[in-house]
Length: 134
Ligand SMILES: [Cu+2]
Figure 1 (cartoon, helix red, strand yellow):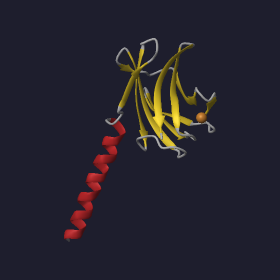
Figure 2: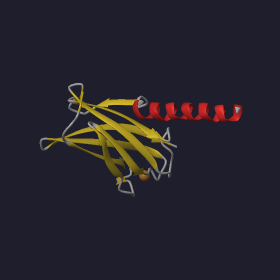
Figure 3: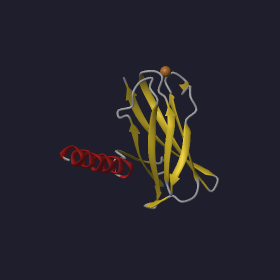
């Protein structure tokens, strides 16, 4: 009986952690270069590993509100080496202003730039973050 209770408790705790992970742990915040959009994101795993696939969860706001129209593209590059990623990431909209990206891969250690290109009404607004991976 006690074992069953413990398993149930563990399930509740695990569920709480999973749900919490979906909404509240976007631990990076930045603005688009034109300062019109706010981007929050997190990676799994964190920190971003070298040569291992990782995912991103992203939230985009415009005037403080989740962006309900428009599109988001995500890319990354090593500008000092003149190359990008070897894989095309898979990006899915998961809700208003929210996206989940799979198949991100930083195949080399060093300096990367991560690009979030927000497209709205035919204009692309870039947000970018500098990341050192080792
Ligand atoms: Cu490189």
